[in-house]
Image: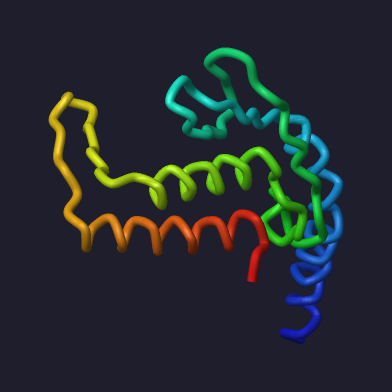
Length: 129
C-alpha cells in the first residue's frame, strides 16, 4: 500500500524533471557582454560600460555552456597575453602601480616569477603546450 502512495510523487517528480529543459530557453535569452576597459582588462557582465561584444551562451543538457569546455581560442586575449609576455621579457625594470597610485619596483627574482606566470597564462590562453 505504501508503494501506491509514493507512485504519484514519483510521477510528479518525473514530469517536473522532464519539463525542466523547456524552461531553459527563457534563461538563455539573457545577454552576457564582453568588453575591454581602458587598461586592457577584459570584463564580462550583464551590462556594459562602452563598446561591447555579445557573448552567446548555449544551453546544454547539463545547464549552460559558457564556452569553458570549448577548445576555441580567444585570439584577442591570446594576443594580449603574448604582448604582455614580450613586454615583461624585454623589460630591465618592472614597476607596478596600484589603484591608490602607490608604486613598487620588482626585483630580478620577482620579474623572473612574473615572466614564468605570464608564460603559463600564454599557454593556457593560447592553447600552447
